[in-house]
Length: 382
Image (cartoon, rainbow, N blue to C red; front, side, top):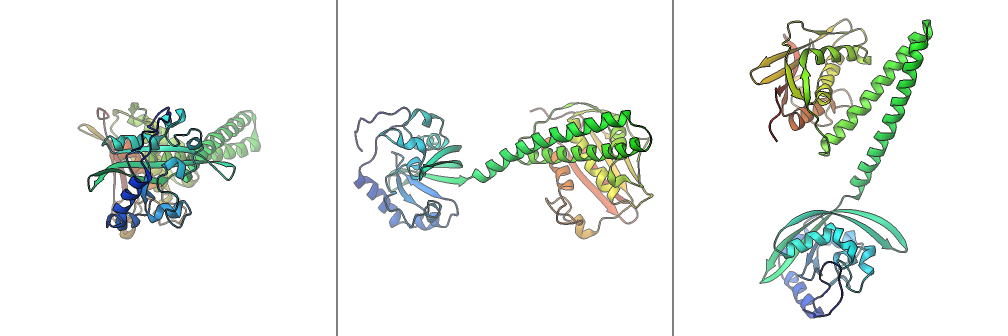
């Protein structure tokens, strides 16, 4: 190993001599491990204790738009991927002050110490005079072959997903603000209007309220799927919640010509849960029940307390076909079209993953269809 006194602000700058790198590379040229790595779809780098490349799989060369290793052997990850900081010091990748925040360097150093690590790496690349951003999810794990300590370094490019989530956040922030402002303005005009104009503004207000609710619902679902959803528990009175939801969805477009009846014999209980998320689950149940109910029909809702759990039920007279029942909670499955199918999936996702409960249903020709969300009266201790 070289004893070069190159300065560094973070990771060691020393590099292995070329003969040692080529010897490590030959370990894989004559090993079945090379075939295993080539079968993996993600780019994989095999690094020596000085964080230098001694082997790469076919996915790596494809990602780097190379035919093979060429002059890549002996280079560090930041040098291979054109990280702008890899050129700022003689020691190269890992040796600048900025490298202290690099997830890739941190994961590799952890592997060298014998501990596998998964980190995010947000890299600024400079190639051809242009600066681009690269978002990677990296995994580094120690690997020993013929007595040589190496690191298996795997990368997953998540730039597209990161960019999409960033744009989604901006989109939801801006569109919710715009729709909320429009709703507030129409509500003010509606209060001041009279006669036919008041009626027309009332229709517009209901449409805008429905629009805001749908946008909020999609925002909640995306946050739940990406594990970014924050649960805010508070005391909830079951009877008050059902009454409020029945009044809210009585103005929903799907409720035209239909009614929602909250059973007076419902158990009036108090539970601690997230009222907004529970409202989303019950709202989807009500919307689905209204859609399955013919004009002139009624949807029933009620609550039952059983020991330490509380069940909310929504009933309609329709029957779900057996083929649909077997797939009803699958993501994006719908019997109503390709652009539908998130409602029942989101019900189970929110209830089970975030509220600590479960969603189930029964559907028969004689009894119709009943959906239930069953929740604990108190959330489980963290």
